[in-house]
Image 1 (spheres, rainbow, N blue to C red):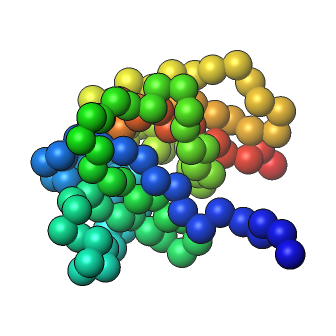
Image 2 (cartoon, rainbow, N blue to C red):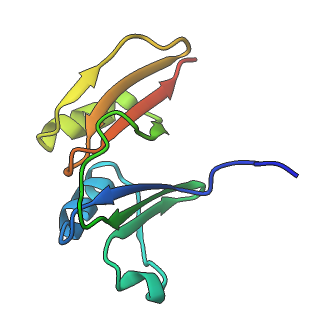
Image 3 (tube, helix red, strand yellow):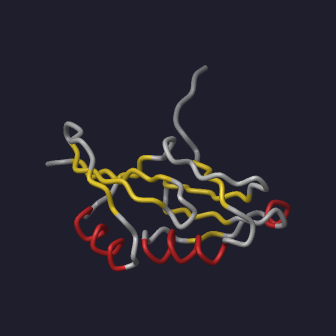
Length: 121
């Protein structure tokens, strides 16, 4: 018995933010939107998945963005993604180097922090 992995990451979003979430997570980051199960869809929010990558956004009534806690998403082609983020008006922050990775931080449209990592070599 033991924990063997992470199935998905859930981030919070304010009510009514689904269009912004789709524009960012699907449009800018390129993660496909998938339908939520019908019994969960009535709660709002949206899900984005691509193979083993699963980022779910759920509506939180008293929403506050996660400014420190964050998912770290592995990227192939970080430079091109940074250009897309800049083109979409998203601020990108380069932080201290992390051995073995190029990395930056960006916020989603709701202020949730995302770390974007590309392995070197």
